[in-house]
Image (tube, rainbow, N blue to C red):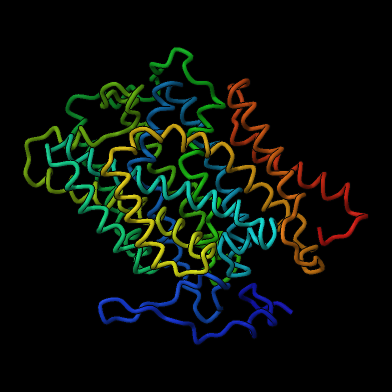
Length: 449
């Protein structure tokens, strides 16, 4: 029997509401449930879970690719690519979120069901490492942004900001929801100010006729991939956030606030400012509108920019670190908070060393492999979900790995040989189809493989 929350009564009986707690500074912190589903008694409201996701994509680093595709494709084609990518992301992330809301299981626990009790370590470890890389990148970008804007010591900013990001992540999911609730409105205020400042020199009446500066440098397929790539990693790990939802329906609604709503606000803002001619060299910097804000000799505005950069980039940093720490805590049988400290310090060291400048392209390439993994999870747990109850536990499910490899291989081929297509979409679709075909071919065999 299933309760209204989407969790079976048997599962509910096994979940101990007297969950363990951690302590910090003499205060008790709620358990993050690294190794078990979140009990029904500890689920959060729709508003809280929505705040976690809503404040994540509405960030400056999401406005940049939005502006870039508009710059290289022109206004209407750029907007079309943004809309298509967000529609796909909503379908993709909401399906994974629905399952998380039903079961309360994190991404690592979801991966265990699909890839096996040992095999999951490859899938979970891969993504948990990639998102820590993004934490290091965005922490480094925080220092670089304030250095370029005000000449502040980049290393000192990285050290102070990194420590703050680690501290927020350490508190857990509650802190992420509070930060998200602040970051999203702050972004909207920043965009409004940027438009108001730019209006004195830019021509917003010509936005829809903007033809772009690309000259064929980007295809529509690559544009869709560029938009999806910004959140393919954490989007696939959405269960780490939406497992706190009270049921599958609320998990989907929380996802809706991120894709398409928050994501569209950020990406279309960048595209709008590019199309109005408000951003210099948009083919290189995309929709980065911070120079508009810092171009004014205004003490109050400069103070706002500092707060905006720290909170805005802090939002993406804390979410990525949370994903990584939760994944690695399950892999090492440790706690999320201990791994937050370990991985956070490691990420800050990488940022201080300046290595973040050199691996962004590598992280983006690794993102090509991610949608196929998510496709396998969707095929296994959503499309073929009814089979889960009768399937015996396995250390490594080779069918899942084979489908992931086929999907990832198709994405890589498209990436290098057919850039008129979206490698992210091809990888996702191929991963789903490959798994369904493999499972149906082998169905007469034992279902425990």
